[in-house]
Image 1: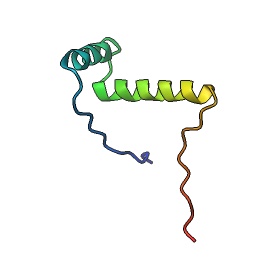
Image 2: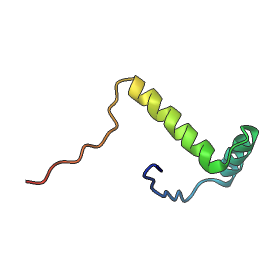
Image 3: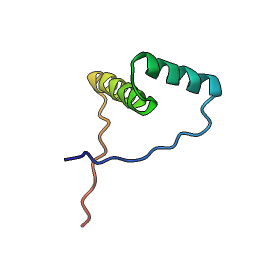
Image 4: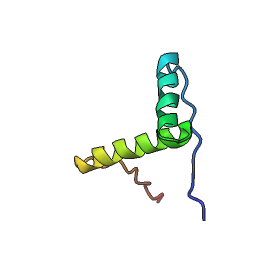
Length: 62
């Protein structure tokens, strides 16, 4: 069973940063997509470890 996913488009990334990110992904033998997901997940875990709640709860309609 696949997870639900969402497509993200990030515009305006400085060229040097994009190239360095792709190089870092290659060094980890990962695709750029997988590397970015890993970085996002690690950062979110760090924030949650500090006690921040990042879940958006949906309100029930009355």
